[in-house]
Length: 472
Image (cartoon, rainbow, N blue to C red):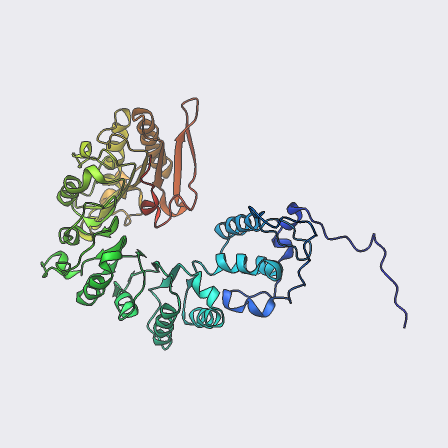
Protein backbone atom coordinates (compact mmCIF):
# COMPACT_ATOMS: atom_id res chain seq x y z
CA UNK A 1 0.00 0.00 0.00
CA UNK A 2 1.57 3.21 -1.10
CA UNK A 3 1.56 6.34 0.92
CA UNK A 4 1.89 9.90 -0.27
CA UNK A 5 3.66 12.69 1.51
CA UNK A 6 1.50 15.64 2.58
CA UNK A 7 1.85 18.90 0.77
CA UNK A 8 3.80 21.54 2.65
CA UNK A 9 0.85 23.92 2.59
CA UNK A 10 -1.38 21.33 4.29
CA UNK A 11 0.94 20.68 7.21
CA UNK A 12 2.09 23.86 8.93
CA UNK A 13 5.61 23.94 10.18
CA UNK A 14 6.23 24.15 13.94
CA UNK A 15 7.15 27.71 14.78
CA UNK A 16 10.12 28.60 16.93
CA UNK A 17 8.80 31.98 17.89
CA UNK A 18 8.20 32.42 21.60
CA UNK A 19 4.93 34.25 20.95
CA UNK A 20 3.52 31.13 19.32
CA UNK A 21 4.46 29.01 22.31
CA UNK A 22 2.90 31.35 24.86
CA UNK A 23 -0.64 30.45 23.80
CA UNK A 24 -1.02 27.80 26.49
CA UNK A 25 -4.77 27.49 26.12
CA UNK A 26 -4.39 26.36 22.51
CA UNK A 27 -2.03 23.58 23.60
CA UNK A 28 -4.20 22.44 26.53
CA UNK A 29 -5.26 18.80 26.61
CA UNK A 30 -8.73 18.02 27.90
CA UNK A 31 -7.66 14.66 29.16
CA UNK A 32 -4.84 16.24 31.12
CA UNK A 33 -4.70 15.68 34.89
CA UNK A 34 -6.34 18.08 37.30
CA UNK A 35 -3.64 17.74 39.96
CA UNK A 36 0.14 17.28 40.08
CA UNK A 37 -0.11 13.58 40.99
CA UNK A 38 -1.44 12.58 37.55
CA UNK A 39 1.03 14.47 35.38
CA UNK A 40 3.27 11.44 35.04
CA UNK A 41 0.85 9.51 32.85
CA UNK A 42 0.66 12.27 30.23
CA UNK A 43 4.33 12.87 29.62
CA UNK A 44 5.94 11.77 26.40
CA UNK A 45 9.27 10.03 26.05
CA UNK A 46 12.22 12.42 26.01
CA UNK A 47 13.96 12.98 22.73
CA UNK A 48 17.64 12.49 22.22
CA UNK A 49 19.84 15.41 23.09
CA UNK A 50 21.45 17.20 20.19
CA UNK A 51 25.19 17.18 20.24
CA UNK A 52 26.92 20.47 20.77
CA UNK A 53 28.70 21.86 17.74
CA UNK A 54 32.42 21.45 17.74
CA UNK A 55 34.41 24.42 18.83
CA UNK A 56 31.86 25.49 21.45
CA UNK A 57 32.84 27.13 24.72
CA UNK A 58 34.77 24.70 26.87
CA UNK A 59 36.20 26.81 29.63
CA UNK A 60 35.56 30.01 31.49
CA UNK A 61 32.05 31.28 32.14
CA UNK A 62 29.35 28.92 30.84
CA UNK A 63 26.59 30.33 28.63
CA UNK A 64 22.96 30.23 29.83
CA UNK A 65 21.44 26.75 29.76
CA UNK A 66 19.45 26.18 26.56
CA UNK A 67 16.82 23.48 26.02
CA UNK A 68 17.37 21.91 22.61
CA UNK A 69 14.56 19.34 22.41
CA UNK A 70 12.09 19.75 19.62
CA UNK A 71 11.74 23.36 18.66
CA UNK A 72 12.09 24.86 22.16
CA UNK A 73 15.32 26.80 21.80
CA UNK A 74 15.14 29.43 24.53
CA UNK A 75 17.05 29.77 27.80
CA UNK A 76 15.57 27.94 30.75
CA UNK A 77 15.46 31.17 32.73
CA UNK A 78 12.91 32.61 30.28
CA UNK A 79 10.65 29.58 30.62
CA UNK A 80 10.86 29.77 34.40
CA UNK A 81 9.55 33.32 34.28
CA UNK A 82 6.79 32.31 31.85
CA UNK A 83 5.63 29.42 34.02
CA UNK A 84 5.80 31.51 37.17
CA UNK A 85 3.72 34.27 35.63
CA UNK A 86 1.15 31.77 34.33
CA UNK A 87 0.88 30.00 37.69
CA UNK A 88 0.13 33.29 39.43
CA UNK A 89 -2.60 34.14 36.92
CA UNK A 90 -4.54 30.83 36.82
CA UNK A 91 -5.41 28.12 39.31
CA UNK A 92 -3.48 24.90 39.82
CA UNK A 93 -5.72 22.75 37.60
CA UNK A 94 -5.49 25.11 34.62
CA UNK A 95 -1.74 25.36 34.98
CA UNK A 96 -1.38 21.56 35.01
CA UNK A 97 -3.40 21.24 31.81
CA UNK A 98 -1.48 23.99 30.04
CA UNK A 99 1.94 22.70 31.05
CA UNK A 100 1.51 19.12 29.76
CA UNK A 101 2.93 19.79 26.23
CA UNK A 102 6.12 21.17 27.77
CA UNK A 103 6.89 18.33 30.20
CA UNK A 104 9.08 16.35 27.83
CA UNK A 105 11.61 19.18 27.61
CA UNK A 106 10.97 21.28 30.71
CA UNK A 107 9.86 18.77 33.30
CA UNK A 108 11.95 20.14 36.17
CA UNK A 109 10.93 23.74 35.54
CA UNK A 110 7.21 22.84 35.44
CA UNK A 111 7.30 20.62 38.51
CA UNK A 112 9.34 23.12 40.53
CA UNK A 113 6.43 25.58 40.22
CA UNK A 114 3.52 23.12 40.30
CA UNK A 115 4.73 21.37 43.45
CA UNK A 116 6.03 24.42 45.27
CA UNK A 117 2.77 25.54 46.96
CA UNK A 118 0.05 22.89 46.43
CA UNK A 119 -3.49 23.16 47.78
CA UNK A 120 -4.77 19.89 49.26
CA UNK A 121 -8.51 20.40 49.46
CA UNK A 122 -9.42 16.97 50.79
CA UNK A 123 -8.46 13.35 51.27
CA UNK A 124 -8.51 12.49 47.55
CA UNK A 125 -6.11 15.25 46.51
CA UNK A 126 -3.89 14.54 49.52
CA UNK A 127 -3.58 10.84 48.63
CA UNK A 128 -2.73 11.64 45.00
CA UNK A 129 -0.15 14.21 46.04
CA UNK A 130 1.45 11.82 48.56
CA UNK A 131 1.74 9.13 45.88
CA UNK A 132 3.25 11.59 43.43
CA UNK A 133 6.01 12.86 45.72
CA UNK A 134 6.77 9.31 46.89
CA UNK A 135 7.68 8.44 43.28
CA UNK A 136 10.13 11.32 42.95
CA UNK A 137 12.32 12.81 45.64
CA UNK A 138 12.91 15.82 43.39
CA UNK A 139 9.23 16.72 43.60
CA UNK A 140 9.25 16.37 47.37
CA UNK A 141 12.26 18.63 47.73
CA UNK A 142 10.66 21.54 45.87
CA UNK A 143 7.63 21.69 48.22
CA UNK A 144 7.93 24.82 50.34
CA UNK A 145 4.34 25.49 51.44
CA UNK A 146 1.19 23.43 51.97
CA UNK A 147 -2.33 24.83 51.91
CA UNK A 148 -4.77 22.60 53.78
CA UNK A 149 -8.52 22.70 54.25
CA UNK A 150 -9.25 23.02 57.96
CA UNK A 151 -13.02 23.25 57.60
CA UNK A 152 -13.59 19.87 55.99
CA UNK A 153 -16.52 18.15 57.64
CA UNK A 154 -15.76 15.31 60.05
CA UNK A 155 -16.79 12.34 57.93
CA UNK A 156 -15.38 8.93 57.13
CA UNK A 157 -12.48 10.52 55.19
CA UNK A 158 -11.37 12.90 57.94
CA UNK A 159 -8.98 10.37 59.47
CA UNK A 160 -7.59 9.50 56.04
CA UNK A 161 -7.04 13.18 55.30
CA UNK A 162 -5.22 13.74 58.59
CA UNK A 163 -3.05 10.61 58.32
CA UNK A 164 -2.13 11.40 54.72
CA UNK A 165 -1.11 14.93 55.65
CA UNK A 166 1.13 13.58 58.40
CA UNK A 167 2.81 11.23 55.93
CA UNK A 168 3.32 14.13 53.53
CA UNK A 169 5.03 16.15 56.27
CA UNK A 170 7.56 13.34 56.68
CA UNK A 171 8.45 13.48 52.98
CA UNK A 172 8.93 17.23 52.45
CA UNK A 173 12.21 18.26 54.10
CA UNK A 174 12.09 21.88 52.90
CA UNK A 175 8.59 22.78 54.07
CA UNK A 176 8.62 26.25 55.65
CA UNK A 177 4.96 27.32 55.53
CA UNK A 178 1.50 25.91 56.32
CA UNK A 179 -1.56 27.87 55.23
CA UNK A 180 -4.95 27.02 56.76
CA UNK A 181 -7.96 27.73 54.57
CA UNK A 182 -11.67 27.29 55.18
CA UNK A 183 -14.45 28.54 57.41
CA UNK A 184 -13.60 28.04 61.07
CA UNK A 185 -16.84 29.59 62.32
CA UNK A 186 -19.42 27.50 60.55
CA UNK A 187 -22.80 27.49 62.27
CA UNK A 188 -22.99 24.87 65.01
CA UNK A 189 -19.22 24.23 64.91
CA UNK A 190 -17.39 27.30 66.22
CA UNK A 191 -13.64 27.25 65.58
CA UNK A 192 -13.98 23.88 63.82
CA UNK A 193 -10.74 22.33 62.65
CA UNK A 194 -8.35 24.23 64.93
CA UNK A 195 -7.18 20.92 66.46
CA UNK A 196 -5.55 19.83 63.23
CA UNK A 197 -2.39 21.92 63.56
CA UNK A 198 -1.12 20.37 66.85
CA UNK A 199 -2.30 16.95 65.65
CA UNK A 200 -0.46 17.29 62.36
CA UNK A 201 2.77 18.62 63.82
CA UNK A 202 3.00 16.32 66.83
CA UNK A 203 6.40 14.63 66.83
CA UNK A 204 7.51 16.30 63.59
CA UNK A 205 10.83 18.06 63.07
CA UNK A 206 10.28 20.57 60.28
CA UNK A 207 11.96 23.88 59.39
CA UNK A 208 8.58 25.63 59.70
CA UNK A 209 8.73 29.41 59.79
CA UNK A 210 5.20 30.46 58.82
CA UNK A 211 1.77 29.28 60.01
CA UNK A 212 -0.73 31.31 57.99
CA UNK A 213 -4.41 31.43 57.21
CA UNK A 214 -7.21 31.34 59.73
CA UNK A 215 -6.16 31.82 63.36
CA UNK A 216 -6.29 28.56 65.30
CA UNK A 217 -7.47 28.28 68.89
CA UNK A 218 -4.60 28.38 71.37
CA UNK A 219 -4.95 25.50 73.83
CA UNK A 220 -2.51 23.43 75.88
CA UNK A 221 -1.84 21.03 73.02
CA UNK A 222 -1.01 23.84 70.62
CA UNK A 223 1.19 25.48 73.26
CA UNK A 224 3.26 22.28 73.51
CA UNK A 225 3.72 22.30 69.73
CA UNK A 226 4.72 25.96 69.76
CA UNK A 227 7.27 25.27 72.47
CA UNK A 228 9.14 23.10 69.95
CA UNK A 229 8.66 25.32 66.89
CA UNK A 230 8.84 28.67 68.67
CA UNK A 231 12.56 29.47 68.25
CA UNK A 232 12.27 29.33 64.42
CA UNK A 233 8.73 30.71 63.87
CA UNK A 234 8.44 34.06 62.11
CA UNK A 235 4.67 34.17 61.46
CA UNK A 236 1.78 32.88 63.57
CA UNK A 237 -2.04 33.11 63.72
CA UNK A 238 -3.74 32.48 67.08
CA UNK A 239 -6.99 33.18 68.89
CA UNK A 240 -8.16 32.52 72.42
CA UNK A 241 -10.86 30.08 73.37
CA UNK A 242 -14.32 31.66 73.35
CA UNK A 243 -14.59 31.34 77.13
CA UNK A 244 -11.21 32.96 77.84
CA UNK A 245 -12.36 36.20 76.20
CA UNK A 246 -14.61 36.72 79.20
CA UNK A 247 -13.16 34.41 81.89
CA UNK A 248 -9.37 34.78 82.20
CA UNK A 249 -7.62 31.45 81.69
CA UNK A 250 -4.11 30.47 82.81
CA UNK A 251 -1.47 31.79 80.40
CA UNK A 252 -0.50 29.21 77.80
CA UNK A 253 2.41 31.07 76.16
CA UNK A 254 4.39 31.65 79.35
CA UNK A 255 6.99 29.01 78.45
CA UNK A 256 7.06 29.64 74.69
CA UNK A 257 9.96 31.61 73.22
CA UNK A 258 9.31 33.43 69.94
CA UNK A 259 12.52 35.43 69.33
CA UNK A 260 12.10 35.65 65.51
CA UNK A 261 8.38 36.44 65.43
CA UNK A 262 7.61 39.43 63.17
CA UNK A 263 4.03 38.72 61.95
CA UNK A 264 1.20 37.68 64.24
CA UNK A 265 -2.59 37.58 64.29
CA UNK A 266 -4.12 37.35 67.77
CA UNK A 267 -6.38 39.02 70.28
CA UNK A 268 -5.11 41.26 73.02
CA UNK A 269 -5.26 38.48 75.62
CA UNK A 270 -2.65 36.48 73.69
CA UNK A 271 -0.57 39.51 72.76
CA UNK A 272 -0.02 40.28 76.44
CA UNK A 273 1.45 36.79 76.95
CA UNK A 274 4.16 37.09 74.30
CA UNK A 275 7.40 37.80 76.11
CA UNK A 276 9.44 39.17 73.21
CA UNK A 277 7.64 41.50 70.76
CA UNK A 278 10.57 43.66 69.72
CA UNK A 279 10.60 42.24 66.17
CA UNK A 280 6.84 42.39 65.52
CA UNK A 281 6.16 44.61 62.51
CA UNK A 282 2.88 43.13 61.19
CA UNK A 283 -0.10 42.76 63.53
CA UNK A 284 -3.71 41.62 63.16
CA UNK A 285 -5.82 42.35 66.23
CA UNK A 286 -8.84 40.05 66.37
CA UNK A 287 -12.13 41.14 67.98
CA UNK A 288 -10.75 43.77 70.32
CA UNK A 289 -12.27 46.76 72.08
CA UNK A 290 -11.13 50.36 71.73
CA UNK A 291 -9.10 50.29 74.95
CA UNK A 292 -7.19 47.22 73.78
CA UNK A 293 -6.37 48.85 70.45
CA UNK A 294 -4.87 51.86 72.17
CA UNK A 295 -2.90 49.52 74.42
CA UNK A 296 -1.47 47.68 71.41
CA UNK A 297 -0.59 50.95 69.67
CA UNK A 298 1.21 52.17 72.78
CA UNK A 299 3.11 48.88 73.00
CA UNK A 300 4.09 48.32 69.35
CA UNK A 301 3.30 51.60 67.60
CA UNK A 302 6.86 52.77 66.73
CA UNK A 303 7.76 49.44 65.08
CA UNK A 304 4.55 48.53 63.23
CA UNK A 305 4.56 48.59 59.42
CA UNK A 306 1.18 46.91 58.83
CA UNK A 307 -1.88 46.73 61.08
CA UNK A 308 -5.24 45.02 60.61
CA UNK A 309 -7.92 45.70 63.24
CA UNK A 310 -11.26 44.07 63.95
CA UNK A 311 -12.69 46.67 66.29
CA UNK A 312 -15.83 45.84 68.20
CA UNK A 313 -18.27 48.43 69.52
CA UNK A 314 -21.81 48.56 70.85
CA UNK A 315 -22.83 51.97 69.54
CA UNK A 316 -25.43 51.20 66.88
CA UNK A 317 -24.38 54.25 64.86
CA UNK A 318 -20.77 53.13 64.61
CA UNK A 319 -17.73 55.34 64.07
CA UNK A 320 -17.91 58.19 61.61
CA UNK A 321 -14.48 57.30 60.17
CA UNK A 322 -12.17 54.32 60.67
CA UNK A 323 -9.81 55.91 63.22
CA UNK A 324 -12.29 58.06 65.10
CA UNK A 325 -11.71 56.58 68.55
CA UNK A 326 -8.01 55.83 68.20
CA UNK A 327 -6.04 58.83 69.39
CA UNK A 328 -2.42 57.59 69.56
CA UNK A 329 -1.55 57.39 65.86
CA UNK A 330 1.34 59.81 66.25
CA UNK A 331 3.32 56.90 67.74
CA UNK A 332 2.99 54.84 64.55
CA UNK A 333 5.85 56.49 62.70
CA UNK A 334 6.46 53.49 60.36
CA UNK A 335 2.89 52.36 59.68
CA UNK A 336 2.17 52.15 55.93
CA UNK A 337 -0.83 49.78 55.77
CA UNK A 338 -3.99 50.04 57.91
CA UNK A 339 -7.03 47.76 57.53
CA UNK A 340 -9.97 48.56 59.82
CA UNK A 341 -12.99 46.26 60.09
CA UNK A 342 -15.95 47.51 62.14
CA UNK A 343 -17.42 44.63 64.13
CA UNK A 344 -20.82 44.97 65.80
CA UNK A 345 -21.90 42.60 68.57
CA UNK A 346 -25.14 40.71 68.06
CA UNK A 347 -27.22 42.52 70.73
CA UNK A 348 -26.21 45.86 69.24
CA UNK A 349 -26.82 44.58 65.73
CA UNK A 350 -30.45 43.90 66.60
CA UNK A 351 -30.89 47.54 67.60
CA UNK A 352 -29.77 48.82 64.22
CA UNK A 353 -32.50 50.56 62.28
CA UNK A 354 -32.53 52.45 58.99
CA UNK A 355 -32.55 55.70 60.96
CA UNK A 356 -29.40 54.76 62.91
CA UNK A 357 -27.64 53.79 59.69
CA UNK A 358 -28.58 57.13 58.16
CA UNK A 359 -27.19 58.92 61.23
CA UNK A 360 -23.87 57.09 60.87
CA UNK A 361 -23.72 57.94 57.17
CA UNK A 362 -24.34 61.62 57.83
CA UNK A 363 -21.60 61.67 60.46
CA UNK A 364 -19.15 60.24 57.94
CA UNK A 365 -20.25 62.75 55.31
CA UNK A 366 -19.66 65.64 57.73
CA UNK A 367 -16.06 64.50 58.23
CA UNK A 368 -15.36 64.51 54.49
CA UNK A 369 -14.26 68.13 54.62
CA UNK A 370 -11.65 67.53 57.32
CA UNK A 371 -10.59 63.91 57.98
CA UNK A 372 -8.54 63.42 61.12
CA UNK A 373 -6.41 60.97 63.09
CA UNK A 374 -4.33 59.02 60.60
CA UNK A 375 -0.75 57.76 61.02
CA UNK A 376 1.82 60.26 59.71
CA UNK A 377 3.21 58.23 56.76
CA UNK A 378 0.24 55.96 56.00
CA UNK A 379 0.11 54.86 52.34
CA UNK A 380 -2.82 52.40 52.19
CA UNK A 381 -6.10 52.65 54.11
CA UNK A 382 -8.73 49.89 54.02
CA UNK A 383 -12.11 50.36 55.69
CA UNK A 384 -15.03 47.98 56.17
CA UNK A 385 -17.71 50.23 57.73
CA UNK A 386 -20.48 48.46 59.60
CA UNK A 387 -23.23 50.77 58.42
CA UNK A 388 -22.99 49.67 54.78
CA UNK A 389 -23.76 46.05 55.58
CA UNK A 390 -27.15 44.45 55.41
CA UNK A 391 -29.34 45.06 58.46
CA UNK A 392 -32.58 43.51 59.72
CA UNK A 393 -35.81 44.71 58.07
CA UNK A 394 -37.18 47.98 59.35
CA UNK A 395 -39.92 47.88 61.95
CA UNK A 396 -43.26 49.56 61.40
CA UNK A 397 -42.32 52.58 63.48
CA UNK A 398 -39.18 53.10 61.38
CA UNK A 399 -40.85 53.07 57.98
CA UNK A 400 -41.09 56.85 57.90
CA UNK A 401 -37.35 57.16 58.61
CA UNK A 402 -36.01 54.81 55.95
CA UNK A 403 -32.54 55.90 54.89
CA UNK A 404 -31.48 56.99 51.40
CA UNK A 405 -30.91 54.51 48.58
CA UNK A 406 -27.63 52.66 48.19
CA UNK A 407 -26.32 55.33 45.83
CA UNK A 408 -26.15 57.77 48.74
CA UNK A 409 -24.10 55.33 50.80
CA UNK A 410 -21.64 54.87 47.94
CA UNK A 411 -21.52 58.64 47.50
CA UNK A 412 -20.62 59.07 51.17
CA UNK A 413 -17.77 56.57 50.96
CA UNK A 414 -16.42 58.19 47.81
CA UNK A 415 -16.50 61.62 49.44
CA UNK A 416 -14.57 60.29 52.42
CA UNK A 417 -12.04 58.58 50.14
CA UNK A 418 -11.47 61.72 48.07
CA UNK A 419 -11.12 63.93 51.14
CA UNK A 420 -8.65 61.54 52.79
CA UNK A 421 -6.51 61.21 49.67
CA UNK A 422 -6.35 64.98 49.25
CA UNK A 423 -5.84 65.86 52.91
CA UNK A 424 -3.04 63.36 53.67
CA UNK A 425 -0.11 63.69 51.30
CA UNK A 426 1.34 60.26 52.13
CA UNK A 427 -1.94 58.38 51.50
CA UNK A 428 -1.79 56.82 48.02
CA UNK A 429 -4.81 54.49 47.90
CA UNK A 430 -8.06 53.84 49.71
CA UNK A 431 -10.06 50.60 49.70
CA UNK A 432 -13.56 49.97 50.98
CA UNK A 433 -15.81 46.92 51.04
CA UNK A 434 -19.20 47.30 49.41
CA UNK A 435 -21.75 44.56 50.12
CA UNK A 436 -21.38 41.49 47.92
CA UNK A 437 -19.54 43.30 45.13
CA UNK A 438 -16.21 43.11 46.94
CA UNK A 439 -13.57 45.75 47.51
CA UNK A 440 -13.22 48.95 45.53
CA UNK A 441 -9.94 50.75 44.94
CA UNK A 442 -9.83 54.56 45.03
CA UNK A 443 -6.91 56.74 43.89
CA UNK A 444 -6.45 60.30 42.69
CA UNK A 445 -5.80 61.03 39.03
CA UNK A 446 -3.00 63.44 38.03
CA UNK A 447 -5.68 66.13 37.72
CA UNK A 448 -6.81 65.54 41.32
CA UNK A 449 -10.06 63.72 40.51
CA UNK A 450 -11.16 60.53 42.25
CA UNK A 451 -10.76 57.33 40.22
CA UNK A 452 -12.52 54.16 41.41
CA UNK A 453 -12.32 50.56 40.18
CA UNK A 454 -12.69 47.02 41.46
CA UNK A 455 -9.72 46.03 43.58
CA UNK A 456 -7.35 43.36 42.29
CA UNK A 457 -7.50 40.04 44.10
CA UNK A 458 -3.90 40.14 45.31
CA UNK A 459 -4.46 43.56 46.89
CA UNK A 460 -7.30 42.35 49.10
CA UNK A 461 -6.36 38.74 49.73
CA UNK A 462 -6.60 37.23 53.19
CA UNK A 463 -2.85 37.64 53.69
CA UNK A 464 -2.49 41.12 52.17
CA UNK A 465 -1.70 42.74 55.53
CA UNK A 466 1.14 40.26 56.10
CA UNK A 467 2.78 40.92 52.70
CA UNK A 468 3.53 44.62 53.18
CA UNK A 469 7.29 45.14 52.75
CA UNK A 470 9.20 46.78 55.55
CA UNK A 471 11.51 48.64 53.19
CA UNK A 472 10.63 52.11 51.96
